[in-house]
Image (cartoon, rainbow, N blue to C red; front, side, top):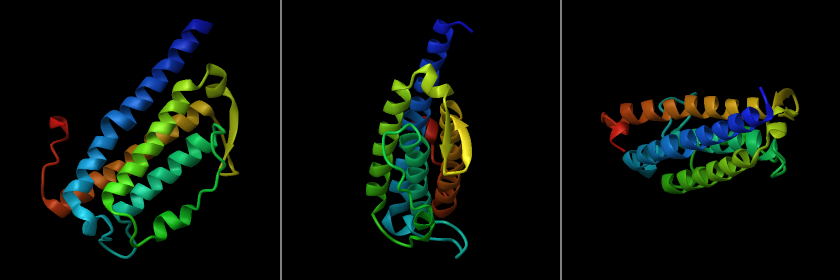
Length: 167
């Protein structure tokens, strides 16, 4: 792969990262939170399950750690256990807005990443050796999995077809 191809590939990665997080996932999460209402956002179906609120906190924490801290934009101050320990907190709209702001910042970081940034090895969570690209792919895959949990929880709680393809 020549230098021009590598730069083009980096731009495609950035474009797809933004499209998936901001163009697809965030509007769907916003719709789920609207349908659930504030009370159900913090509902745990069983004590060992996470609420939608927990998952939204977790998505924000993971994206902050794996993109913003890993690429050196912020210091890693994540308190991962707190994401899952919370039983109440901000209303759904505030949770989604905060996640959206994190996604927007992460998209700017990935959008500015050079080929060297994507290839450079990094240490994440003081134990995982990752390249910048693998951190980006991790966030996409991780967020997709938890977003799917939120979509399923919303369908189960409301009995509604979420009609995502109508958005």
